[in-house]
Image 1 (cartoon, rainbow, N blue to C red):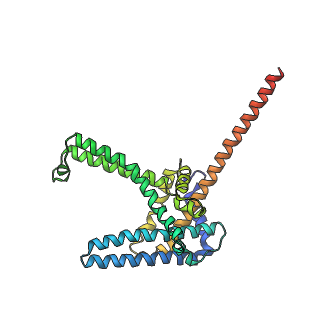
Image 2: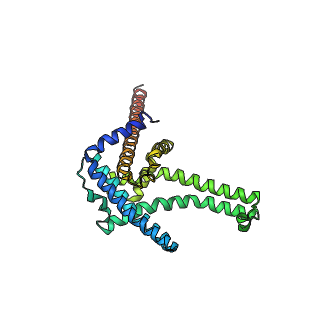
Image 3: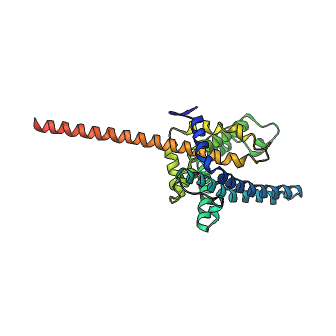
Length: 277
């Protein structure tokens, strides 16, 4: 597969070559992510084994919130490599260095999810209204032999929510990479930039993500240890994708600007000719 003039394999090859001199530091950063994740997973398993399911669910929710700043920091480490900046393993915990940084990292996790939720709400509301008008009850939906109307309602709801979530998720997919590249911009600005960059590239990014599915299948058999290598690799490959889109968008904008300049010059010359006549 290609991203216009560049193959996925080329992006991945460039990524591996770029991070090669810094792989030990990046692996240590990914190792910190894996270690913290393992602690939370172990706590959740112990609580579940002792019939504390509610507490285990709370641990899982807290884990997601606390792990994302580390993921974001690992992506920022890759961004620093591409910008020629020095990195160290402790950078993986950089978003814990101040309350402001931690808050921004959490917001980078929460805000896209809120936007996706807001986009799915109309589908949920419309489906519930249609269900109510059709006289379909929740008991009918939950019964062992639901009616055709109940089945259709559930199918429409699932397809609508999943479809919108995938599309909006792809739109916001570059958010962490933009933040890593431009740490001073706000999360909302980053999301807006991601939406602009992903115009015309959502399908390609989806296919690009699927190209890693083979590696993802190895996470369980390796007890997650492959993530020490996989996290920097995926981050770098995606950063290559992001950089390539930036260049292509810049070239497109330049071409449009040049055309507008040419048209302006031609119009000016035409006006001068008309005045001379």
